[in-house]
Length: 332
Image (cartoon, rainbow, N blue to C red; front, top):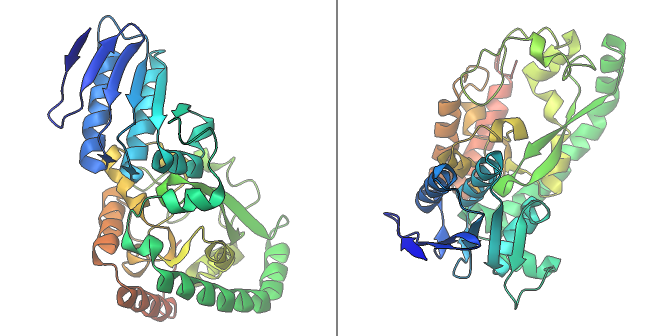
């Protein structure tokens, strides 16, 4: 049996069953990057270990970067046919894995005192406080009140919008798409449809004018004439008040990415998932239709997290309303 340590104290023990990594108390961005690098080295080692086992007995906090590192390592190990196993997962770890659905994907062995399942109330209590906004009661009340008002407005405008969409382009009134929320949890985001019905199937026909892990085209031919108006006025996003009411989104937050985008993230970029995504945010009030570099999206999202306060949220909401009345304000 042999052992060695990483510069950030990730002891690795080699045994007959494989390589055992002792994960520290916190798995945040710095530790997560080191952990991912060690897993990558183990996958390239000769001879390869029979498995990579994550010993989580001491781990009580995992943020979105930690989740990103585990997902990246799971994919990397799978590519070279090395099983990745999680052992001695405590209630905090199990709560995060259950929230993101990873408990059904990964080979996880809970700590003896946890058991195979954790009920909803205990899971909520065990989830990490990755950012002050996540557990802010006042912010949640603002979201509930704002979403209820928004849904009333949506109900009033839904009939004329629905009629316009149907006249302009036969097909469904609403468009839904899977997005990634807090800690990478997937949810279904709703919008009024602004593209042709087969837009997703025709995506390969459109040039991506953005740089990095997201898609954007200023003159996307899949957008209908009515859809262009809805996007310019942001009326297409009104159904997202339902996502806010359910707690999947917030009125103000970061841009909600698609799973395809997240699949291309480096570990540090997962930090943008430490808060709930928002209907508006720094990216909205800083020219979202002109932001075409993914690094700029990351910069704006991290700036929101750093500068967050209830007052800052209100400021961004007021700026969003003001911008909506300006020419060429919407996302094209």
